[in-house]
Length: 86
Image 1 (cartoon, rainbow, N blue to C red):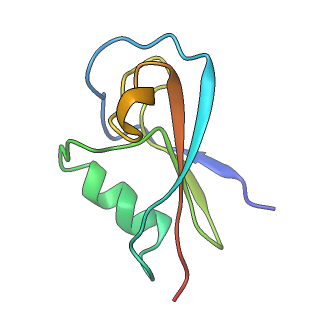
Image 2 (image 1 turned 60 degrees about the vertical axis):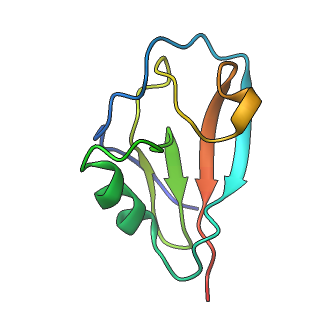
């Protein structure tokens, strides 16, 4: 089990009142949750609420802020990105 580290690094793209959870793969084999957290901290447009790998997880965008992670579902979802091991 992994403890989620609260580390808000991006404010997303406006208000969100989520009703669903979207789980998605990062499609970036070998990149860790911290690698993604670091990228999103630099103002990257596609930051997601949560990211998790095989060792750690981060909460990086407030749950009430819009993220661009799943196309048409963005306006309804909190997003969780799952990292891929190599």
